[in-house]
Length: 257
Image (cartoon, rainbow, N blue to C red):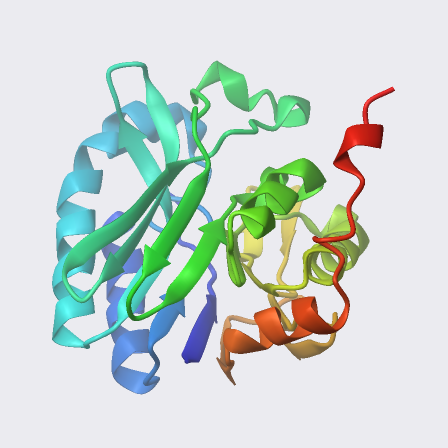
């Protein structure tokens, strides 16, 4: 399975420009799965979320068409208007059809995301004929190990994590991506943004593809837009789990004090 992890410099509040960048990437790099950053179509333009949410349906329809045209899966998160409010909404379009939707369940309290987003209420897990069993998280979700252990127990062999992680905490990002892969014995694919948000926040890049042993197969730079092309075999996850039986050896009955 060939991955194209698009470490993108998102153009803030310009969905059509970002869609054009995606089209160019699809034309230039052949892959089975294309992974995009968190809020890849708009970035974190919080005050414009209400206005821009109206564009999401058209953007997602075009992504569905592109996934069919290029015979691939395209995944990432956008903003979406729901009856409860606006969510940070992950979609995976597989050859024209949406095979997974997930709303970010952990909102980042440090930046008070709860002021303009509502949290999702369920996990993101998919059993795909083409893409295998995989789970998803979005950015801040990375800090919650229980979430990824649950996905592993349910059979996920790969995790995809779109992010807009800042440079000031890049060491946390890199360490946690590797840790999640090792402790759950699956592939961990993170796709981070690069560039600036305003004048103060610099995004970290360092998108990563980590194998079930914790080996970093590919890693992006800290400041360049680029595409990581990596071929993986999801079956390696099960092979590692059979060699070191971490999930089977858990003592769940003792973990509550």
